Image (tube, rainbow, N blue to C red; front, top):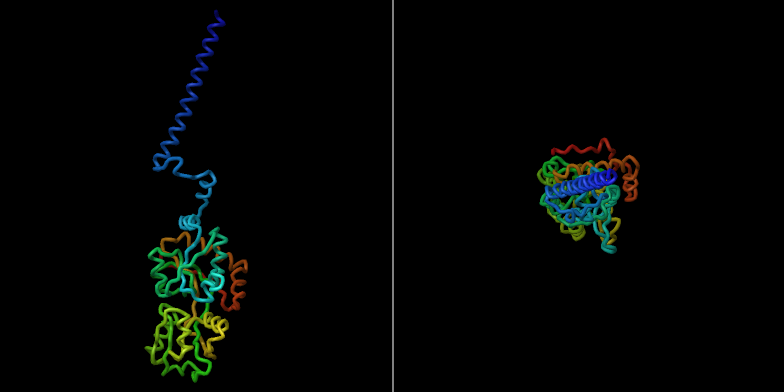
Length: 313
């Protein structure tokens, strides 16, 4: 009898223990469901694995995460060689700026770069209209531009050049006084030409939307000379033998400046991520190697400290 009584008590205890386990399990499940409900998502809606959750907490900026999800970084450029342009034969993006950006993207884990062609004068407008992620087109970092966008630390530096016909009577900058000069609006070089016009150092200024039409204009005699980017001018004349043009020499640049990429003010964390990679490239020699591959000397290189950009926001 006593044995039967003990067996009944054991059964009762096991039943209570089993019920407690069930209640605990249900409570845990209920808590998980409440957490998901508070987030407005069901477990299937989140689509997040443990690995994904770990990566999302890796410290990457929200902008970088969105670009990775999209699969590419969309840049704006006026399609000017040798900075950021599409090779007409291969369809691939090429140029000094593209090579620098490609290495940055590699280090950040961004799979691809795509480009939207925009007139240079509208690049920052399109950026702030959220139509592109970044402006990458040999853009000088200048005070007036820092009022409308944030800029990376400087990538490299350079200055302007004057392009004239091969048999031009123009021998010095002073010979431009009675001449018509062409330039591309939105660039530092156009502003330089505007200054020359106001000072009476040129007779007339003509605007051309891009580098190709600018060079065509001077080649066809529509203008006497053009003022443009020195690197672009040297590259264009060496690459296109049909252009019967040359650089005005000797010539001392007035509009030398340092180049960076532009982002929206709100993408501050993404900007910091880009700068970190950029300055690592400066320290490990990668950036200088890219410049030398395009025929540029150490004179074009800007170090990490001297290349710091102070943004207003």
